[in-house]
Amino acid sequence: LSTVLRLKTVSLNDYLIFLHKIARRAVKQRTIKRDPFAGYKLESVPVNHRYLTGEQFAKLTGVELPTYRLCHARDLFVFSTFTGLGRADLANLTSENIVTEPDGSRWIHIERQKTKAECHIKLLDIPSRIIDKYKGEDGKLFFVPATSSLCRSLKMIEEQCKLGCHLTFYMARHSFATLICLGNGVPIETISRMMGHSSIRTTQIYAEITNQKVNRDLL
Image (cartoon, rainbow, N blue to C red):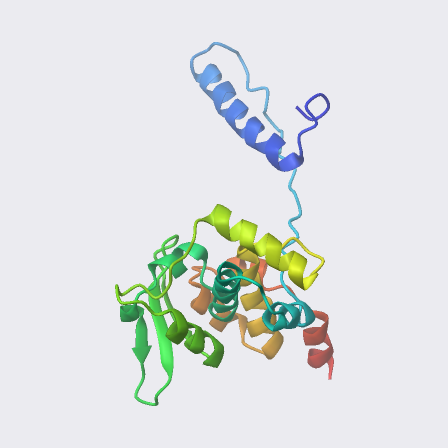
């Protein structure tokens, strides 16, 4: 798998996991006498979670895009960057999820589709304006295209902005944790709650330590 097919470690591990299941079943059925995977550990792969820098995000929001489709995709990406919502949660968002507090502030109250965790996220000015721009009559706040369509649009936006990175919609969630929250001094416990994580350890995967935060902490 690694030398002939030249699979990367992630793909290789997927095959080995299935093969190990077959081997364990063969041992139980006494087809083979011992587990050939005994003592073997899958190679762990360090994952580089990518997020937009402040300069890249400024380019993204400042560029003039030629079509409505690209502007729509950018607005969805920017909204996700300011709220941390993934594509599925964005598609499920309705007017009932927007709650106005007595002090006039607006919040998103939503149960995440993936983890079923309740999230409370404060709406800042930019995402509030995006909601007002696209709010429809059917209760849904946004029309969210299929993932493949969003990826094509983001690739075109990336080329327009000359970001120098492979722009994906999931980068918005990483940028929320790193650029918007951690970079502005939001405690990781608060970030974890807004992102709907059951463990802070999961949030730490998203929240990379930036050089700006290190400099600020050392002052």
